[in-house]
Image (cartoon, rainbow, N blue to C red; front, side, top):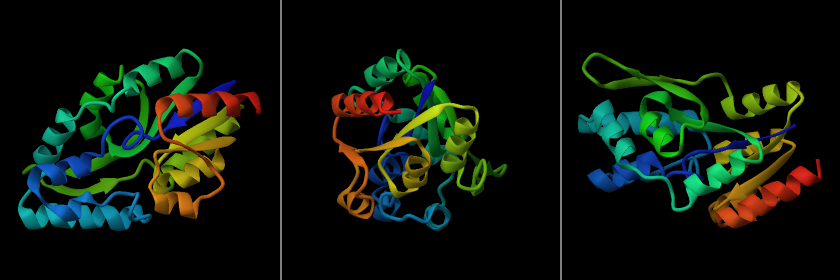
Length: 202
């Protein structure tokens, strides 16, 4: 049986932190895992910026709730779920993802937890496990699934490498340069075709 694992931000919905950067004008918040491969470094940078600006969880949540899925994302996901089991593997946080999951038709989501104190300050974060995307794919393969995966950033490369087949979706040039072995797709039609083709070869 085949199962597809998808990244969330950059594949199905816009980047939440970029949305916050656009809302506040804080350019340093534009950095994502497309720019900084070290996720812990990236999150420490983000949380330090929020603390310096006196911003908290509600500021981030309001941006997440305002976002809409990327054009065609819901239709693509519905098409995909007619043909495969689908799991979203994301480095976002459950406290932010609810509104986005509702707009996508409540797909299954594996992600992480923010640590929020009583004042609403984000004091830290907890990964579901170390290398959560890669380890999720490894666990699914141990259940005798053939796993296809698609993502766009450095933090997706472990997932793609562990999967039986991996596809990049609208990646930046630096990710393509550093991971040249993957099929690159730029729209949902091409991604659909790449996943179907890969499934036939497994």
